[in-house]
Image 1 (cartoon, rainbow, N blue to C red):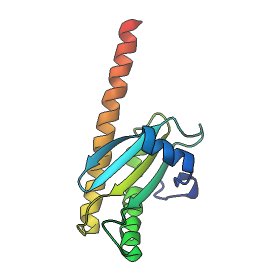
Image 2 (tube, one colour):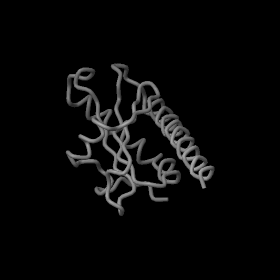
Image 3 (tube, one colour):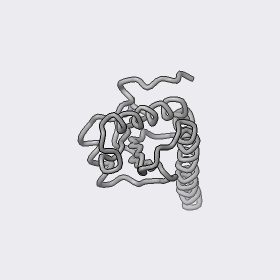
Image 4 (cartoon, one colour):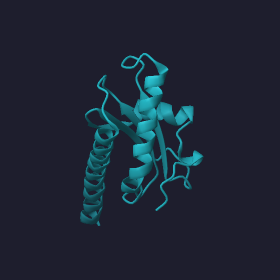
Length: 137
């Protein structure tokens, strides 16, 4: 598994970001929130990820950039949790939603817990859909 964050995984499309905010679903693990939308990407792209830190919580750009850097790093190191369990393409946006200045280790553990929570919710949904289809057949 490569632990990289290539340019083609970065969420930059305004239309995809708009879809995330209008039709996306979210999962939270304080202080992080993951907004996701499936099916809005091309066939060759498995995942797109963006990060955001609120200007309301951190007035200085230096502080916002610091936490965005940490979010990107924790995603880069733990994205295998998502990629190994996804069957269709997803677009994600990861938000840091507190004024608290958590350490890297705390943010990393919360990111892992958030990804596991997302996987648990989506695997349950996919399994129940597959069960319903098999019952009909």
